[in-house]
Length: 132
Image (tube, rainbow, N blue to C red):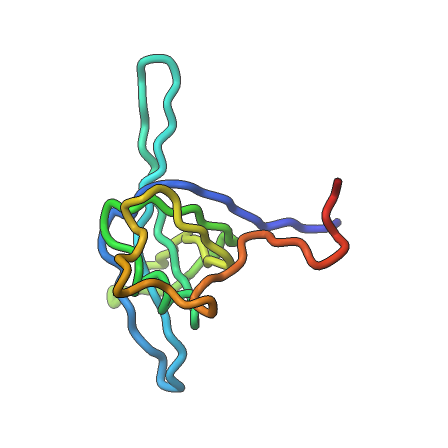
């Protein structure tokens, strides 16, 4: 049976992105995203942890801040481990594969204008693959 694991979320960062590096200097950026769902007069908020690797992580940390709107594409990832008491633990989060700035709040100022190489395409089709 085939499998498909893709998530697309748009929401607001719940905290400033935290950037760290692995021992072989690969960037890892972790941040939270609040995604609202409104039905009738009620509204619920889902808080999702996001992890971005490499250049994407560096771009998120450089240009995004708490409260900024962001569109994220990625896949669900499940981490499993045992805590110090021997209890099994798990955490579900999104591993980001693409992102797009949304709104004006996270647009860089003129002096920190992003370079072309800073942008990660969001679902851009290859030449000749435009569906219309």
